[in-house]
Length: 345
Ligand code: NAP
Ligand code: 3JN
Image (tube, rainbow, N blue to C red; front, side, top):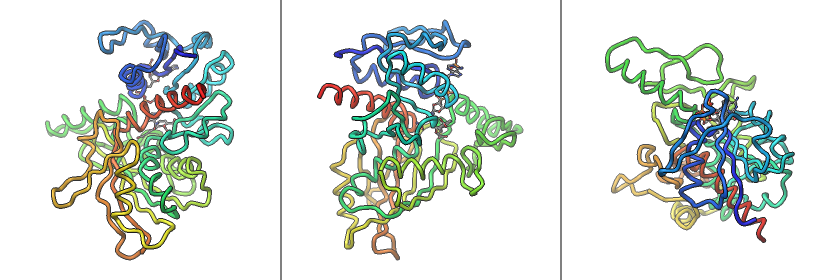
């Protein structure tokens, strides 16, 4: 198969539009790209680089003659159409949590575990954005020095909650500046009926709570990390926080390696040579990653590398990436590229 027919489900959304941009930017070998969304957007036209694409409603027949279907319209839509797409001959790359923890479905970050793509049943899961950037940054360290424990706190951009959340931050910021009452209608998402302002605030809740006191976003980070690293025994804990940034998730990651006598320089040299990572780590020149400067970039940026003062194998680092790019669209397109490379072998 030298070129493939592609479909994007959720093509009008925050993630779907980036998938289309990445496919075009990377010259993905597509013979056709079909944009799918809900009935509401059918007939709309999306223009990228002077090329126009008409949006169609997603129906089972949409997947006839599709080789690769990217899904990013929420878990319910994936559950409704992914198996149907596979039956009609497509391989599905699913950006939702619908199938991530299903044992027989590979959960893939190509820099970490592209090898698991060799066996799949037609559906491949793309991890949660917060998981992707953390495992990308930890993989070179894990490979060389082993890993026992991760404790992560996230500072997540509103674009992770979709196009409407970006609008909410902008509207609330104007309300704040105009000394008007702030109208909170959306965040935290998945939480029911109680909402808080995101402008000039930090909300320590992303998605609903489960009975353990963790939110589902935190549980995704914990469970997906163990699956991707194939390390059930790894200790992982997470606190996920929404902050008033448009794009770029940041993470404070504490980790303990397995080997003794590892230095910060040892860790830095592994990161400097790793694929997809840019090290920005110089206290003297105040050089460190920030979400404002990660927007639109493909890389995972790592800085603020330090040894823990009390634990001989403990380290801290600060990890930033554009959540809609490596955290979602780029990782999905890289999965498709790896898949085509695997099939060629
Ligand atoms: P969004 O901006 O709200 O976009 C939602 C998309 O889903 C739109 O294209 C929408 O089309 C489409 N859609 C809604 N109902 C549909 C239906 N009945 N049939 C077909 N399409 C339908 O959301 P987003 O931020 O792009 O996120 C979309 C999903 O991607 C999320 O729910 C999540 O599962 C996943 N996601 C994953 C990550 C990650 O961490 N990897 C990050 C963010 C999101 P209309 O324009 O027609 O409404
Ligand atoms: O909030 C974020 O920053 C990331 C959100 C991801 C998300 C939002 C709604 C539904 C997901 C996800 O990818 O885990 C889902 C979902 O598919 O469960």
